[in-house]
Image 1: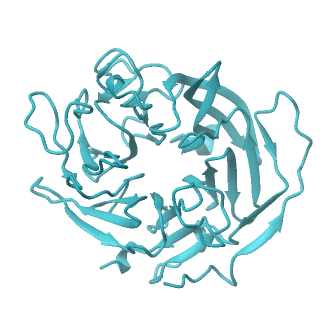
Image 2 (image 1 turned 45 degrees about the horizontal axis):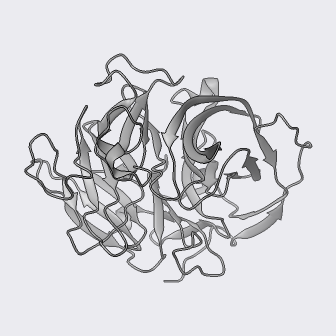
Length: 375
């Protein structure tokens, strides 16, 4: 499929740094980028074909939507990109891009319009070890200031770093997906932050109603990288199964407070006492490599890296196994993030430059899709 570009096409442009970086600055404004020329507010409701919003990106990992319609995009090597009428790129200090680690998830505070708080999940180094952490910034007047580490000590590695962060729609707590950092036993250790879904207050403190008295909300996860809430405020999560020689058992889970999701003792469907079975799984011989989750109009959408598709899990009102649909298989390459925009459209990032894909000359991209146009 030949993808149409926004307006008159994808534009390259230069940024002139507003000021020289300082040693104490949490970021450095860089001097160039290549992105599309439009923002969320330019979307049209009758869009039928997928539409490129930005190209020539460097492993885009996550997207957040600013109140005015611009996009904030994390790139795994350590840059934060603003896409809109005024386009800027920032380099975040301290990020270590090693394997699957780097600058990963982004979330805006529910009261962002008032407090301008922005949260980033990143891989850093502590001595000889890789460690993941959450940092909070104030993003105002195109500047990132007031950098604060609100959660650290999440085990990191070249693989299985998790990285998705989202605020709950009701409780306004920050939910965080973490991987097992290649140490599968940590997923069952409720005193470790690895292989978990975490839940913290917006300042990093522990909510009093968490199930284990720490940041852990659910455990037994191999490498969860997607979370989304449906219309009934139920929390769903996508999780990577095995890949490589042993592949399969990617999962879509319905997350319960304090729930055990089995890894490394179980994969896929299970009757093991005290362990939740997935609502949907890829089977022993098939791989999605699900790297995100977004809810829209009765369905959970997620990107497939190895599956090279946009997947749609249609939620059944009777609580049964969701119906899985596959869209754009093989057309975009590796699909990582799926986000639901305030315009009701889906925003996808490709990940063809992450060392595991076959990038085109203009990869990576952000692609906008109208879910109403999908079969």
